[in-house]
Image (cartoon, rainbow, N blue to C red; front, side, top):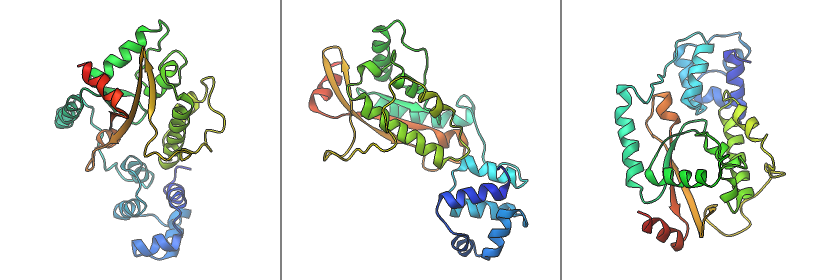
Length: 260
């Protein structure tokens, strides 16, 4: 259902907004919203952008709605190697380097590692050295779920796996046009936790779910903070996520500080 009306209806329902409520916010009649969704009326470019703003549709998807209504895309997509992106790249390099001695990386919308600091790279290199079958991939989810990847070193793997699957599932719902191919691929790995959709993470009084890893003799406890660009109007920039790991206990902090 790639017509403008079909896409608008999907987004409106996913946001649990009635036609009347949407019409009131857009200062049009509910009948006009109904006509837009059924294809009996065609929106102007300004109306498309107004409705996208009201429904808080991600800018990646706004291009799709514009194109489905017969208009040119609004938002660009630059490659990280292009000159226009150099300030963005430098900002990410600064954040990654400044975060040492703790690991940090930059991920794209499909969870591929685009950039990382020395600590993050050293951890992956250590894991790869433990297993000649370590997967040759930059996708962090594939590394976590592959039995030959990071999985053997994650003490609370089932908990972490359930958390990532729930997040990936939510992303497929939120970004309705995003392919579910990655989720389908991850679910093909053996040993996927049963009932991961229903698993809760509130059994213990704790602020975050920590990643527990065993690196040789060391047991590490880490939690991550995800950051994004708040004023991005480029699709690539909008989709970038900086993941910075922090120590969850004093022993982990000492481990990284002594490894500089």
